[in-house]
Image 1 (tube, rainbow, N blue to C red):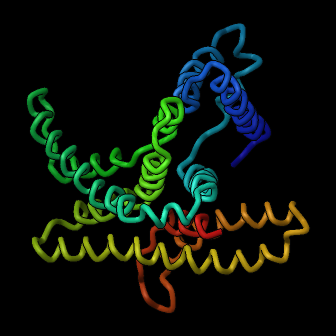
Image 2 (spheres, rainbow, N blue to C red; image 1 turned 180 degrees about the vertical axis):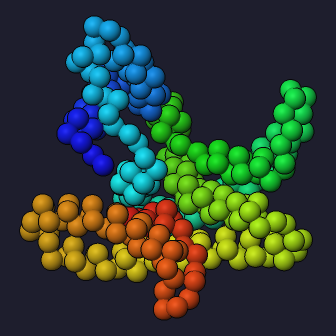
Length: 277
């Protein structure tokens, strides 16, 4: 439950994050790199004896999985996709799809294989399925720092677009792959049947994620046509759409639709909705 001090901590951290953006722009450092650095320094500095009475309230904010997953994540995904040009993405659709799916699978397999054979040399032996889970977790990329370097060194715009588009979609494919591997880890591997079931679940999450995203984008685009004269309502609708697409997808995963249990990727649904909006 949010308290007064935890809400104060939340908005104080958001204010600090905004200030870091202007500093990063002035000293020409990637925003995310500087943001992580400030975050690492903020905790020990706030706990200094002479500063703790003034900044001790920062510890009151507890980042729960629900807060991150249902409040922050939809907005971050929506904002990234909303600012991309759909026509240019369609022109590079094959490259983006190949990297976001095939590239992700290759990366996961390579990381898992390397961990499985290297870790025993340092006294750590883990099942291969656990190594695959770890590979799926870290194979999705964050393009912000790299795109900043692309901009500084004048990289081709199409390369930047492919890199950003791939990083946007592989968030969804990575989560889908992780859930498939997790299901195999929990229920056991049964040969070809498990592979077929995993491929079907993965394909279902991607396909239904696209369908739900398109349907929700169609619905909200119609509503936005009537709010062009009121910017406040338009912005409110966009914020609602980001969360509603994500949470609706999660609700379908939990309860099904029309009595059918289907798998939907909320990240892909939100990404597709934002692109078309």
